[in-house]
Structures are given as C-alpha cells and as structure tokens.
Length: 423
Picture (cartoon, rainbow, N blue to C red):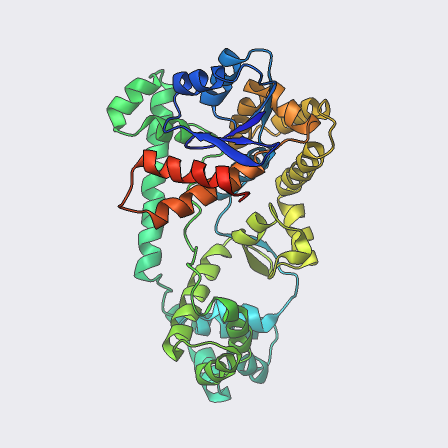
C-alpha cells in the first residue's frame, strides 16, 4: 500500500487508485497513529510538510519516503519568481532594439516645455524646421515659434503630482535606510534598532542588505485591462502622429471596447513613466515588462507573447543573473525526471553559489528532506492521484455546503470509493 498525504491528510492506495481514508487533522500524532494501523507499509509518498515526514518516520522508520515532484518544481519556481519580484522593477530597461526617432520624440515631448526643449535640441543637431515639425507632428509655424523662444525663457519642466509623490517617497525611504544602517554601524543590535525605529525584524534585515532596492518593484506596474492587448499598437500609431480617434477606430476593429479617453490617459502615464526611467540613460532605450521574464520560468521563449529573441538576448546581456537562473531551472527539471538522484548534490552546490536569499531558503528545505527528494527522482511514484482526489473531495464538499459536517463528507467519499472506480 502506498499513501499520499495532502492538506487535510487524504490517504490514497496507488494499487487500486482509491481513497483509503480521510483524517480531519494534520497533526503529527494523529497521522502517526493512523499509519501504525497499517504495519505492512514499505513506501510512503507525501508532500514536503515536516508533519508528515515525522509521522512517517515515527510510524515506519524503515519505509521509503518519497517527496512529491510537483511541489519540488512548483516551490522552486515560486522562489525564483519571488526573487525576481523583489529585485527587478515592473519594467526592465534595455538598450533599444530598434532605433526609432519617432518613438523617442514621443517620449521626449510630454508637455509644452519639453516640446520647446526638443525643438531647440534637434535644431542644434542640424535638423531642419521641416524635419522637426515632422517629428513633433506640429506645423512649421509652431516650430518657428518654439525656436524663437530664448533658451533662458523656456519654462521649467514640472513633474505631475503622482511623480512628485513617488520621488518624495523614495527620498523618505532612503533616509530610513540610512538611519538603520547608521545605527547598525554604531554597534546597535537588531532588537535595539527595532525598538528605536519601530520597524519589523524582516524590514530591518532587508534594509541592512547591500542589494536592498529603493523601489518596491511595483511602481509602474499596471493591472491588465481592456487596453492591454492593444497597448503597443497605440504607442506605435501615436508615435506616427495618428490621432486618438483614428487609433480608437483601428483597435475597435480588433476587439477593443473601451473609450478614447482611456487611450489618452494611458499615453500620458506611459510617456511620464518611461521618460522618468530613461532620465539617466544616454542612448535610446525600451522597456520590457517583468511579467514576460517571469513567464520564462514556466514557458519556452517562443511561447511568451510580447518578447522577441533579440530583446531576450539584450536583457540577458544586461542582467546575466537571469540566464543563470533559467539554466538552473532547466537543469533541475532535467534531474527530477532523469532518475539520477546523485546529480541533485552538484545542482545544490551550483544553486548555492548564486547566493540568492529566496533560493537559499528553498535549498535548505531540500537538504532537510534530501533522502525523500532523492527517492522522488529515483522512483516513479508521485502525488498526482492524491491531488486529483482532493479536487474530487472539494467538489463534493461544495455540493454539500451548509448541510454536512466532516463525518458525513467522509462517509460519502468512502462509500463512493467502495462502490465505484472514480479515480
């Protein structure tokens, strides 16, 4: 008999593919007592919870314990994604793959002051008034008015209220980080710094790290809405001077159901945010949403819409840690299904060499249960049937919602298992 443990402790016999029993507990003692009622158990497949590891070891010390492969892969993916969300901004800045003066002009001319400055800059670079008018999508007379304004009289560029608030928040956070690091350098213990500043332990430890990001990585992150599939169309068409009304008509033919006002609001925010991100860049840049690189944790590059091969190569060149992480993921996936359990040791050493906090936490969990992890690679057993059984139990629970307790639910499930081959 082989048993699978999942959240509410469901036991499944792999020989018959049927649920053996359900326990309304995850406590080690209760699970251990149940296991002892089956003295002939030789193999126990389970998830990575310490409760089940201890219960299986206490009840059957000689049994082979097997960790669930699905959770090994999922937890690694979650750790990598958590790391990427912690250190990478919502949109990664890379050198432009296509040098497009029209696109650059779109980002450099958010308001009148910037349009005047842009006209002067291009005029100094040797552009004719006609060329500048084409880039600005303005009339020649307007460009002449811009150039007639003395550089000393050009109005200063002011950030909008939201940008001003964000800049101030970054300054405030930097001040707090500096204060924490100063206290620590003066010899104060972390507990004392917590008392003096009022911050949580995790926050203090984060501020003391060299790689502590000033921004939380969520700024500029947009919730996907009606416009999401057509954003690039809007940016490209607007850079060519096409009116919002014409753009709206074009994307409505593709299925867009929003308003023209939404296009204007989107472009204003896009130009403001990307102009701020590019302030320290000397060359033309473009911006790749972080979500595309998170998708690469689970998918091949050709299956990620919105990310090209060239963009990927440039990003990897700028952020080499990403390539190391993706290679680590691919290698772990290969090892898990290779039946060569000894290779996991060298993989752990390679992963630890990256010195990533989230990855180290995952590795510590592997090392604490390394025998069961190696068994999951060596043996064919897994928790797939148990996961399917849990879904079946949840369905029955919803059907009986408000009309039964645990014992009636258990009786219903076991009765079905006895009379029908449901799995």
